[in-house]
Image (tube, rainbow, N blue to C red; front, side, top):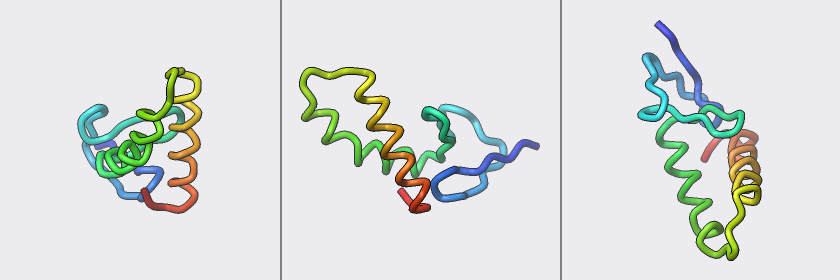
Length: 74
């Protein structure tokens, strides 16, 4: 049995299914709850950005997820 740990909340998930109950962003592994919370934080920034650039989006995701990992919560 494979167990993986969320980088943000440190919750262990057994029998994880990537894309369903566990997600990989850049070099972060996050559970579904943390993913939803962090995407909710990023959404207003993305909607306000014009013109949209994928490089910019990647940086926002990395920065937001990195801060969440340091704090230990989403």
